[in-house]
Length: 453
Picture 1 (spheres, rainbow, N blue to C red):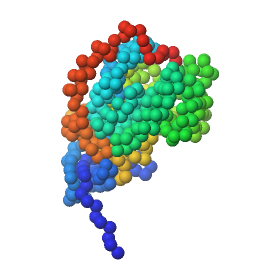
Picture 2 (cartoon, rainbow, N blue to C red):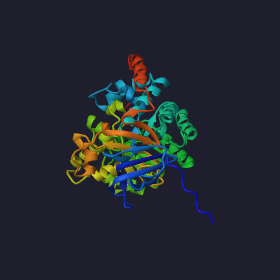
Picture 3 (cartoon, rainbow, N blue to C red):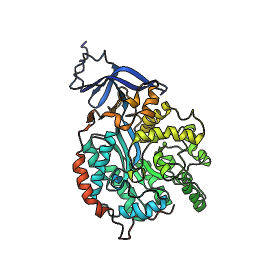
Picture 4 (cartoon, one colour):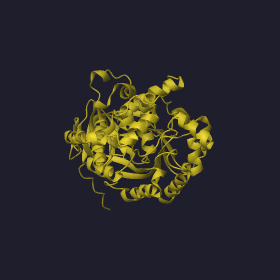
C-alpha cells in the first residue's frame, strides 16, 4: 500500500501572530504564537509557530507583535459613492437624496463609477476589509475593479420600478453573468433599491426570480423609524411586512439598515423560511439622527447582523473597524445595559455573522482549515494598544483601521506593511478630481428618483 504523497511547499506561512479563533460553540478566543498555513488560497492549518518553523513555504510573514483576524466584511456599501464624500452634510435624508445625491447620480458615467470603485477598494484594503457587498449602478465596471484589485465581493445591479421591467431584467442579467467571476471571489445578488422605490409587483417578481435562480436579494428596508411610520400609514404594513407579503422573507435576503424594525415585526421575521440577515452601519444613523439597528431584538430571533458602512456619501468613511466599535457602544447606550454588546460579541458580528449576512458563512469569517485565506494582520505595538489586558477589548476599542499592516484575500497579499499592491491611488485621485466639476453639477434639474418614503 502506497502512502499518500506529502503536500508540497505552502504558498504562505504567517508565523508568530496572535490568531483570533472560534471554538465549536463560536466563542471568540486567541491562539498565542500561532502560525497560519495557506495553500491555493485556502487556510490548510492553524498551528503553533514552533510546529511551522521548518515547513517549506514560498513566502513567510513574520507577524510577531501582530494579531491575525479574518478579513473584515463590509456588508452594505455603495463603493463608487466615495466620489461624493462630504458633498451633502448636516441634512435630513430627504434633502440629502433629492437635492444632492440623486441629482448628482444622474451625471454618473461608467468612468466615474470605475474611479470611485478603485478608490473605495484602496480604502477597504487599507482598513482590513477583504469582502464587501455592493448595491449600485454600472456593476459590470465594479466587478472588473474587484477582479483586478483582488478583493472579494457580493455585487448587485440596483434598480427602481421607475425604470420599468428593464431595470429588474438588467439586475437578473448581471447576477447570472457575473456569478463566480474573479476565480470565484465575485458572488451576485438581485438588488431592488427599497420598498419605497420598488412596487409590490416588482418585489414579488424579484422574490420569484430569487427562488428560481437561487439568488440572494440585497435591498434597503426599514431604514428609519420615519420610513416605517410612513409605510404603516400608506400600506397598513411595516416595511418588513411589505417584504413578507411579497415573498422576500421566504428567500435569502440581506436587509440594509433595519433601524425601523419594530417589535411587531418579530412574528413575521420568526416565521421567515428564507435566510434573513441585516447589515448595520451605525455611523450613518448617528449622522441622520436615526435610531440604531435593534441588534438585541434580531439576536433573539437568531438573525445575523453584519457590520457595514453604507456609502461614503452618507458615512464619509468605509471604515468597518469604526463600525465595529460604534456597534458595541451604541448598543450599550440604546439598551441602557453596559453588558451588551461586549467586545467579543462585536468581534463575532465582525467575523462569522458578517460572513453569514453576505451568504458566505461556509467560506470566510474565521481562521480555520478549509476557509478561504482572507486574513488581516493588525499591529498591536502602538502606544494606544498597550498594555493589553483584554485583547478583544483592545481590538474593538483601542485599535484602529490604520493599525492594519497587511491584508490578504484568497491567499493573495493586497497590502504589505501598509503598502498597497493592487491600486495606484495617486493616479486614481488625479483623474477623479479632474472629473468632479461635471459630476457634481446639479443645475440641470434632473434626478434619478424622488425620495418620498
